[in-house]
Amino acid sequence: MQYDEILRRKVSYYMKRDILLLDANTSILSAIKNMKRGNEHVAIVVRDKVPIGIVTNENIFDSITKDNIDLSIDKIISPLISVERSITIKEALDIMKKNNVRVLVVIDKGIVYGIITKQMISNVIGDYLNKREFSSIKPIMGNLGFILQFAGTLFVIPALLSTFLNEYIIATGIYLMIITMVTIGFFMNTYGKKSYLNIKESSILTITSFIILGLIGSIPYVYINPYNISEPIELFVDSFFTSISGFTTTGLLLFNPDNIPTSLKFYYSYTQWIGGLNFIYLIMSAFYPESRLVNMRSILTGKSLRLKELFLTIVLVFSMYTTILSSVLYLLGYDLIESLTIIMSALSTGGFLPNNTILVESNPYQLTIITIAMIVGALPFALHYTIIKGKLSYKHITKEILVYMFVIGITIMIGLTVTELDAASIIFHVISASTTTGYQFIKDIDEGFKILLIILFFIGGCTFSTAGGIKIARFITLAYMIRKKRLERNEFREFISIILLIILFPLLTYLSSLYLVNSGYTMLDSFFQSAAVITNSGFSLGLELDNIAKMILSIMMVIGRFEIIGLIYILLPKLAERH
Image (tube, rainbow, N blue to C red; front, side, top):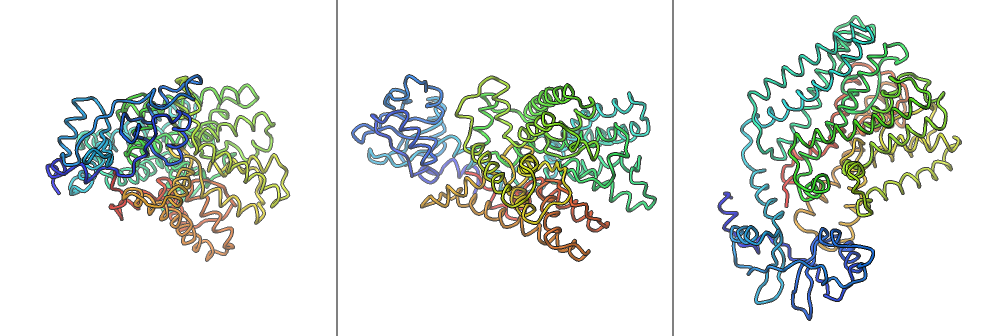
């Protein structure tokens, strides 16, 4: 199908037929409930079965006050512009532009037949672009070049810190990494180009960005050799594993943090911070370009963000959180560098600690700040932005956040019955697991608690956060789809994608755990460790790993970081079509 053919097709080919009709006398509060129950974003208001206007979620929330919530919905309707079902997509776009509207009501012989929105048309065109022949890597190179240059610039901070602390060997390793990252990014920017990425290209960009960041980020570890290894291959494997563990915010270490210099600890935590922010950027800009991301961006600034602006916004928001929380932790008695290291790792749900006993020696106030940082990292990025901009209202306390808090609460109560740990330890470790951070101060985890933590690993945090796992929103969407009698074409594809994720997370975990079982560990311990890796949780049972196991788990970290969804979109591009 050609682009012109899309524009020539009738609107009836792409329109949505199942439309919510609201009587003009329906109260605003009842309208909200009806739209929420049907998961509808648009409704047509009728009087005596004759359409008189249209309302959207945006209309309602922009107009609603505590004084008018019981008024009838016809008081806040927008003008209804109707078109015959025989007009073309091009004609529909012209009418939308002329009347400055985003929704048209499609009628047939005076009867409401459906609606067509600008977003639907945009997604159809996106489908066409998504199916174009993949013949050039230049768009990927251009975007990857920007990521490398931006990340390389940010790494000046740990380089300057190591210089200030007179830890010149570490500083040299970091400067070598920065030069390599910025240089490669420059050439990619020069030979690449900024253009639309289809979903397959976006998936490749996400995977390659973490692999390249992991490879280049291993330079300081190879140069410094904190493992005291003389064999080159093993040194590279350990360095790559450590670097990937940082950038994917997994947090598994192959060296003792008690035995390394301060600036190297800060550098590792900083890689988690950069990796977490890079992940949010890639997921928001690449894998969620449909209506949900459009709504997300409208929450952020009221307009569509440019990708560079999006990345800068993410960095600024999390920099503010890092500054505030690390300052509080410093005032509560931690060393300044320790405070920064812990908070950066917690906000990125990375789970790195500057020494092995710091949590055990922490007081309840310090643990509370760390817990808050973990939860902040696992909540949606848009929520943080609205709080900072002073625009927070109850509409932003989404169902996903409420369900997430409910899951944490229920799991804590279950934990109190399946383990003999004290309540404070259970609460901390449940939150650490549900946010996929991986902070832990207990080593001997009993079997019942291991199973509970594995479930939390797989569930994960909220979408558009630094947390790993399948994500709460997908389970909510799945529950809604199961209740719905008939799924639209795009909903069915999303349903299949969610089912595949729910199957693939434990399946890949099981397959990778088989190698650990062959190494002499129990199936539960092997499955627990593999689950902690693929969900980027970072909980550790202290298993000894050979080079093959390290490479298997390194691959699992990358696969888990982009939630397997990129792999699905590469192998099954049909599931990536947007509507």
